Structures are given as structure tokens and as C-alpha cells.
Amino acid sequence: MGVWRGLRCRNLLVLSLLLYFLLHSQDAHARPANMSAAKDKSPDNKDENEILPPDHLNGVKMEQDGHLNKDFQKEVFLGKDMEEFDEDSEPRRNRKKLIDIFTKVDYNHDKSVSAKEMQRWIMTKTEEHFQEAMLENKNSFKAVDPDHDGLVTWDEYKIKFLASKGFNEKEVAEKVKKSEDLKLDEETQEVLESLKDRWYQADSPPADQLLNEEEFLSFLHPEHSKGMLKYMVKEIVRDLDLDHDGKLTLYEFISLPVGTVENQQAQDIDDEWVKERKKEFEEVIDSDHDGIVTMSELEEYMDPMNEHNALNEAKQMIAVADENQNHNLELDEILKYSEYFTGSKLMDYARNVHEEF
Image (cartoon, rainbow, N blue to C red):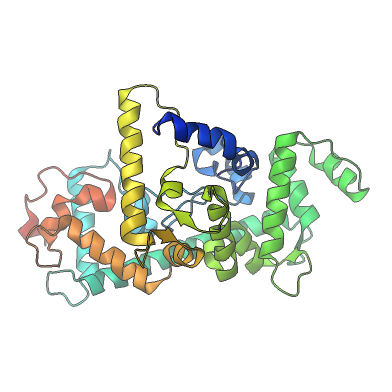
């Protein structure tokens, strides 16, 4: 679930299951969760996003609201160069960039990419996202540390957060100083309570309710901290776990509301969504294939620096484009399936390959 998204329902399931949700899911969906709509906000909200924990975490397979990260493959293949590839770019230029990437992934220069080479590349690109998050965090930390003492109190953060929401910063600071009622609307109050819970989780022992720059990074980017990764997994399970047993069944995992189905086109999108989640649950997340996903399995799946996961992902990425079934990727294969790896479809992908390579 996300703080900024409203409740959504879906009528893919039969009437009896829909009634079940109406009767049993009110508590699970009544509270705010973890800042999910940052990626949907306009550039005008940049200042606000800088101090809000983002829902979308680059290089992590699942969003904090429980949705699968649809851009994961591109993120771990392109790293910080993701924005260089877009549909409007000149195909020949994109082809040259992709060829350049291929030569770098091909670590032993045998003109073929193995699973081990792809694993090594994925880990490198994931680390790039980590470094990018750390740089952004440094700037964000400065914005919420007005006295520049290297520590941020909850009150300092709360004042900056409310200012980003349109409240008068001086008035809020004065009321906070005097412990006066801020008279917040219900939604903003719920968001603050969720943020405060997350703030305490990021406060490393011994807890002092002060966050240094490293702890603030964990607050914004839980993928950087094992403890916060556990917290994020706990939140996701809590949002999806209908019977409250601390584990996820396939039914619970594919029953996350995705929107109202209004026509056949929407129904087809909904069906595809369920298909993708079912495949990910059965083939990847449920590592022991017992039909149940535990918190430890989900934590392992979510950990972006898990080398075993990176190798499995490398094998899956290779399988998508491995037309000659040799378990490696050649240049023509990666160019032909460029849209999968980069989001950019290259026309006449094979033209001039040999003279350019």
C-alpha cells in the first residue's frame, strides 16, 4: 500500500471472493503505508520528493507498495545510464551505446556473455544505483538539517516535511517548539505517524531519536540497511497477508487491488498483471516451492545485493534472448531484444553490426 494512493478494488475475482475482501480487508487497507506515489508526482513536487522516502527504489525487484518493479531489468542492465535510452532517441545512436555496453559486459572478450559475466554486471549496475541514492541523500540531509550539526531530530524533519506540504514553516516551527496542536487534517496526520514509525526503525541502537546521515539514508532508502530491509518486508507482508499468519499464499500475493475493471481492455490488463505475479511467486520468490512465501524468502528476494539473486536474474535475462540456446548472449541477440534490456526498440538491429563491433 502507499500513503498517497486511494483504496482500489478489482472485480477480476468471482463474487464470493469480492465479498470476502469487503468483509475482511478493511483493517488492512485503512492505514497509510510507505510513501508510494512519489514516482507519480510531477517535477513541480521535486522539493517534497527530496525529503520523502520514495516508493520506487532503483534495482529492487518489488516496490514498497507490493507491486513488482516493471523496470527492474532495465535498471540492473543500464544502471545510472537508464535515462540515456528512450523511445525518441535515434536508433543508430542507441545501437552504438548498446554495443558499447555489450563489450563491457563481455568481461573475457570472447564476444559472448555468460551468466557469470551478466551477474557481475548486474552487481556493478546495482552498486551504481546505491551510489546515486547516497549522493541524493547527502543533498536531502542538508535540506533537513538546518543547524548543520550532523544530526536531525524528528521535529526538524517534521517541520520540513509539513513545509513541503504547504504549511507555513515558521508557524509550524513555533507550534512544535511550544508543543501546541498543529491541527492537521486526518490524511497528513496518518502520513506523519507512518513516517515517525519508519524514523524510529531507522534509528540505530542505542536509539536516541536522532538520525545521522547514514541513518537518514536508511530512512529514505531501506535497501541500504539489512534492518530496514526487514522492516520493508514486514510492511509488505502486513499489507497483503489476509489471514494475518505472517506468510503469503499465492492467492494473497495475486489479490493486491490493481484498479477497477471497466471494460475488456482493462480486464486483459488485469489478467496479465495476475499472470506476471503468479509467475514471479511460483518461479522466483517461493524458493523452496512449497506454495508459501515466508518473510525470509521475501527478504532474500528483495535484497538488491544478493549475489545468488543476481545470478538467477542473469540466467533469466539471458534466457529471454538466447535464440540459439547456448546459454550465452551474443551481440545480435541482445540487439534484437533491445527493448527488453533498454526499453528502446532498435529498428534494423542487425544492420552494420559487424562493422560497428
